[in-house]
Picture 1 (spheres, rainbow, N blue to C red):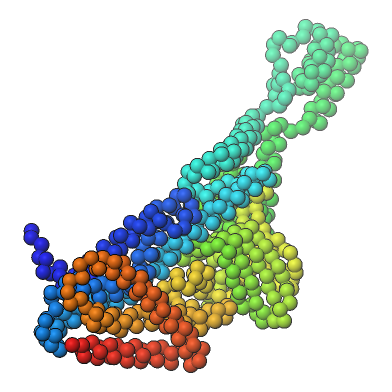
Picture 2: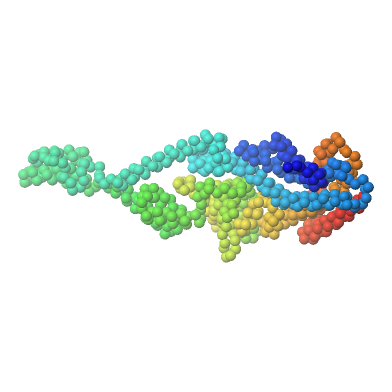
Length: 597
């Protein structure tokens, strides 16, 4: 199929080809010169792609302006030599350039309002994931040194969610897995012994009650029976001793010394039988009965966490007991209302924010909350390294609490959405590894903060928006800026900050169209009358640099003007004034364009 080179000579074709080729060259350049190293080795390729795309999109306005100017110098022959105002060819060239500028503004709006924030969020995700990886890795090392193997396994699992099979963690995982496997074998041996004891129904004696000794133990006279009874007694075979003593008593003459000796020996053997401890099976059954009873009493007293661990242990010893299965499910279902399991954090991996700080209203005072790391999903969040402080209306500290782990859940009280923060983290298999909040100052009585949870007076949706702000205003979508401006007044954020960012984005996009038209005018005014030959090549490189400086200047002016207007007259009047200024500039640019000769 033949290529129509005449179509490639049109202004819109030249502009599009120039922007595409320039973008490809920039991406190639940035693939070799990244600028900043990837925060984690596994993210090297993604980091390089995001850095390159961000660089291209930031240069997009300068490339478009250059692409609008270059056609007037690329082919000088398409210009009408008569230089008449608004000739057919002349108007056709301008119309194509203006339509190209309008199309570029639409693309720029999509980039500026949606694509760039998404790329910035992706970049922050890689950065926060890497910080969480290094934080968890360091915590795993510290836990191993402290002998806290379950905590170390938890931190390694978090690392695996970010970087599966990381070579940096091979030694750590081997040490932790070896230790945990050894403990599992020990527990398995203990449970096997317990089950064996339950299966046995015998004593440590030579016979069971009510069963005679073997025929080889029968004596021929009273003397033999008494001797065999004494030997069995010394060997602590008390049932045998009692049987043989009674046999000797029957064989001995009435009233003889042998009869008295046999009677005495039978009495001693019987006393030892009555004092003998229960069998292992009886002891184990009694202990299991007491455990089951204590677990049931814990359920009746609503001590759900205690009941959970009791029935968790019982399940390993009596896996076929339906009562244990039902009570375990019941206690777990209620336990997670005031606590959560640490292993839940391994199964949920949402948006990550490090060093998240919040200032929230509370009664007549305020709450300040900080997480060293926070993962957020649409209907729950998990945090590590929680620090929480509560102040009264006079800024007096009421309470200061820290917690190793935390879980945030949305719930409603009196039709008012709020957030429940659980600070009691449970190890599903080991009660000793549970983590509770630690009081540094104050008490539950005066602060209203409980030992295992507290409540935030805000909706979970607002909390998500406030968390997104921690990533920076440039990472927020335009609708998130409007939400933040209207909802986050009470938690320490000034609405004017969000309004200024909204005006900045709108101004950057709206004013780009008049600037593009002025660029077309400049291109026409300083068009090449003759073929530029080799001078065109450096201009292809210089023009984007010049226009990028111009874009930076007008963005700075627009941002400063927007902030000043918002602080002076408010957001809505400033927005209306921005639209009026845009309309005037657009009208002036089109007027100047129509006056060109």
